[in-house]
Image (cartoon, rainbow, N blue to C red):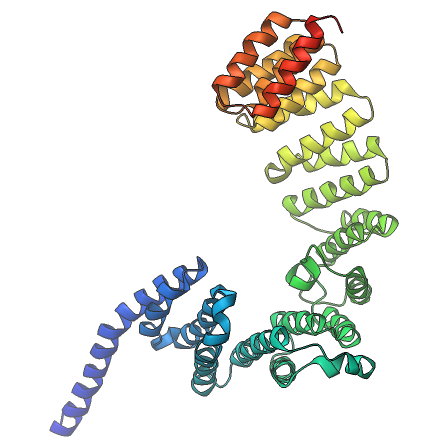
Length: 423
């Protein structure tokens, strides 16, 4: 090998040595920083992510750094935000622009920059005096320049990566937050046409979501049944059934959940279908069918306890106390440390006239949770109802020893006194 070739080979080797020496600590720093960021320890995560922004993790670290800057802003006290707006959000914008220049194929930095502009828009809205003269001009009149830039950046990200649901989810949420309802509903329908599974979207899973938004998504999602290569038909039907249950569309929900059981599925997926079908049937008052559905769901370990509890609840509501007791007994075997299951079992056993069974359940609850006051309260109430006042008095003193709530102790002492007076 010539001297020139040896020199080139040595230089290449040196590069790899340097990359190895810097890359391993950098990778460790990135991993630690990512964990801290996941725990919302943003200030501690930032220097580690800055050190870890190299090698194969560079794009991810740059994006996470930008997100951490937003997290720091979100954690800033309201009284300090005005003074820190420029520094914190400018840093977030810089991180995203740096990422955009170094990882130009990724639209995630456009989405990140949109998040920065959205924070500015929200801050300016709080500081801006309401101009009532613009009410007739429509909702766009109240969207400032930062908000418009945020929307534009998100539309660009969607155009570059149209199948990525996260960009679309963020755009819908921003449009709704800005009061741009018509635009949001159009985007909801377009979003469902691209990825019709509702579980991927925060705007669908928001507990306070507008029913009209949910209906728009459900209708557009239904139009894609059997057409999406990314969502199995059975899973799609289950997701629609859950959404329709939430909207109170019980007929549609029941139909879709029953239909989902006709399609190939894993045992876990089948148990989920049975469980949600049980919930819909219970809503309709079809307790016999609901109980059977819940028992089917309970055959899978993931739904065992939840299915048995729901089966017991529907059986008890329908007056089938033996069935309720049997389901609760199985549930207690599956989850022996649950005080709630013991309390439910005690209630059902008392209704069945099985006082020994009720006391056994309460006794077990006292063993597994000796500092939990609820089983003692339940036992005192049982003693008062059955006239065992001496036992009730003894357990009332026990309740005081474990630190029962003062109002609860006073209530029970008053009930015990009235019972003792024969009133």
